[in-house]
Length: 180
Image (cartoon, rainbow, N blue to C red; front, top):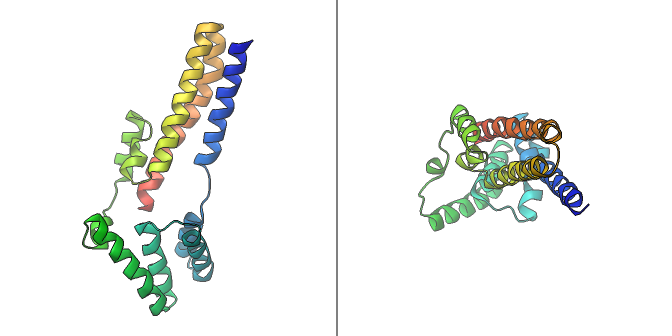
């Protein structure tokens, strides 16, 4: 009975991580709106992200790009100064050093070898940790089920989840690298 409860809790835990991994953030909405040339909505979303505390260099640089496209140069200059101050703190001297092209194929291969590694490579640490925890939880649940129940039941119930999250992590790593 206790083992069944633990397995159910671990499955719920893995589902929560799956939902968190697919979460749409204001920065991704802003990037999508910017790419579709809807600059007003992009500006609204990027300012929302900055207001809620996302002051990473990539977010601030996206704000600069959005505001420059709208010809709001004074606001863009304000965010550019914030970007440069953060780059100087991190020991970098320009945004070009930060904006290296990320190879999406390499990121996918890295994620297929070690889940989450492709996300780390492309700079998305939150999704990398989420991918590793999610697949680790699914693997742990399948091992528990294999030891305590019928091995056929363990395989039939855990392999589809593992393959879904494993392949999803590989695809996600490629998408993260293309975004950078």
